[in-house]
Structures are given as structure tokens and as C-alpha cells.
Length: 87
Image (cartoon, rainbow, N blue to C red):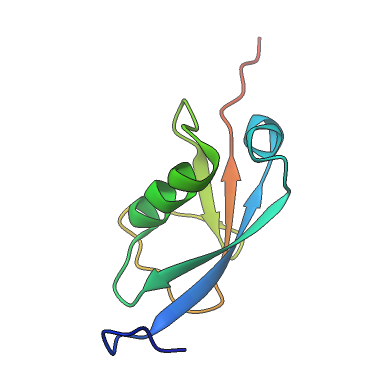
């Protein structure tokens, strides 16, 4: 898929858990991104769609926990996991 600017528009699947799923009223989102975008860029897009997530989520890409500077590639599966408290 190509945008009007000639840049490739790629997609990732975002899985939402716990309070993030409640906020979005969905379990899964398909989100477009541009080549070179990071997980932090993706979080901005998700918040623009569903609202402020609150506390920073734990992030897993393809089942592996990653930092916000991880660059996305087409067809990545990103899971957003809210922080939990225990005792």
C-alpha cells in the first residue's frame, strides 16, 4: 500500500489487555505506520485513537518484551500490557 506521498504505509496488529482493552472497547487494533517508526511512535497513534493509556504499558513485539525505541516492521504483533500491582 502506498500513500499519496509515495511512502509505504505498513500495518501492525496491536493486542490490548486489561484496562487498555476496556478503554478501547476492543481487543485488537490494526494500526498503520511508516517505515522506520518505533514502538513509541505506535503508542502515540494508539493514544490518538483510544485516548490516554495512563501509566506506561509493558510492550511485547511478537512475544518478546521490547523498549520504546524498537523499530517496527510489517506484520509485527504488538501487545500492550498495563502495569499490575501485587503484594
